[in-house]
Length: 137
Length: 137
Length: 137
Length: 137
Image (cartoon, rainbow over all chains, first blue to last red; front, side, top):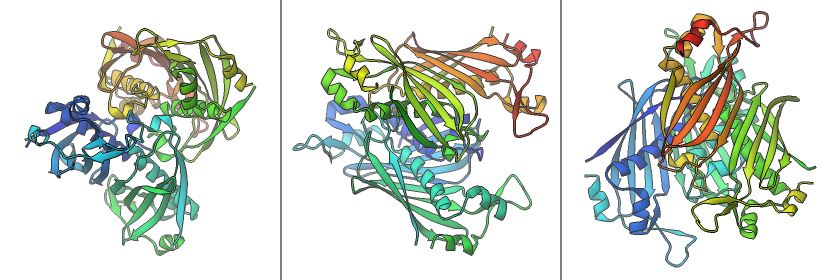
């Protein structure tokens, strides 16, 4: 199974008066990492949209456990891997490593979403094609 | 049990090219709402820090389920309530209501954190005083 | 000449380890205020886009002078006013008031932008209609 | 004169419904770049604070001209250089290059700030030591 590593520098503006990362930023980095992981296995989201008629990968669930704080100047690594493929959704796992230690563990659940055939303003979950799953193996 | 309602306007910069709220912003609003809820029951965090020697309420877990998207110009309400008091941690629940519908359900778990008596660079969970719990009843 | 006042609470996540507002946030609030000011004079941007064929009001210049810092919990007011109407651009001025004092002075210059008639991927500045200017008087 | 180049990937969350970078983000990148530039010439801000008694480099003025938009997936470079040394302030210039073109030009003016000797809650501009200026030559 493929994984993806994405380095992030913790900048001044990412931290709060307690001098640690303001927690919603971890989800920003998860979102970045998911997109970069897709790119890294040759799945460009824009091309997927054109090819499969998907309109994106809307998130339906996000979770994080914060084990250790990260601080201004820290250089952290977000390690991403597929947690699970379901028929129409998938779980992307993310682990933040700081100075060799697991600092944050998180996951995002996203939908393979198409335009609804009868109502273009709505979305509808579609079945994830097997070649998408295969690209991460 | 007390609850707290916090109105948020979805601004242009909160939304992404899919024209919906970029999901980490919901956690920003959860964080705001938790602080405002404490204020609303008379518990100012700065005063708590002085009075009890707590150094803050670091987050150890955050979760959200995204049921419906919100868009630019939407005026949403974040409804917060205590989900659970444990000995040294508490769960704050948040529900986002948009046009009368539950759009996001989330929770944050936070620690009643003190400086470690033997190592001031470390934190240590303390027992939540009963009067804190009572303030939310 | 009309003006617009927009209240902003400085939240924890808006501040940095120096315990003051991280300065790019002021531009976020300027952007919010410009949109709200247009709304307040009856000019909804979405309707303008439909009615005049404008595709938005892209920013070409932003400036701020920081006179006094604002801190977590401060409730500030952004006061916006038209600084100048030029043929195809306008300047929006913003003043941040905190505890009765001018804290930040800023401006944004934006373009009345249309799709280019010969190349839909490009933009082209258009002449601002007189009724738009009148709406702010 | 030394310069500094800092690469930035434009991520999904940095862009708005017009599919371009939401402009306050450029100031976030300017702030990052200023700090990284100081680091690159051997001037670590934390060490400067200890050594010179400065409490930081608060910003007093920020400006940007937006020449061309940048989009999701773009890899831009922020080129920073000293614009001017005054007695107690300095100007940091930033140019954003995207696909070989100048996309944004900006500047930040920052103060060499000390604690006020008679009132520790206030700041006071100090004279910038010559060795600081020399470090950028």
